[in-house]
Image (tube, rainbow, N blue to C red; front, side):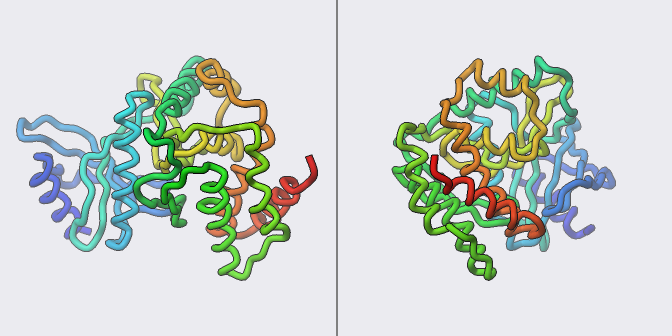
Length: 299
């Protein structure tokens, strides 16, 4: 690891003017994909700041590059705080992403949760200028590839790039879901009276990817960004919990949801359950099949 830190320090100093403080690395737990540390750095004036460093194998550099691009794109909206990228690249025999370090806390109270909902809605108001769905680069959801090639139709995008792609991954593993072909044909019916705008999405918004800084300002991180229906973000916030009624109250005060969201959220969360089956297996296969059965029932 000493070679990694030496290489990283040289890259940072050369490209950003920041020099890592030797021996300041504090390993951070909780992540299952990357190694992570908090480190101290100082600029040419000797002023210190804290950085958050992620590292992985060299072949994971594209994953870090897309994360940095997503964080920068969200930051440019000036709607909700994200950790700003400082540097991304190869350091020795590893890839690395360096971010500003934010000291974070869980919810400091309902009014702050409401503000998170309002700020997320403002971020969702940022839409793709040509009305397209996708993003200008593919990324990952967890460690699963997430294709984002642009499409003009949201139902077609979600059917092909999201549900269809996950079902193809499942079939490659010998996992075949009853009714999957019928579901692909049925997806447009969920949008017969609803035409969503291509909103800027976080893309992986569960409770573990949202918090508050020391001042109580909302922070979101670890994005899987693309432009899509804002309901996809809201649906995932409900799948594993972690967001209070105050959060949803704040969101709807800024931008009320369409009444059909109650039906479509099962469709949106199927994508994440299929991905969890791909990543972790276990009971997710049963849950995914149950969701497909529910979506195919006559309404």
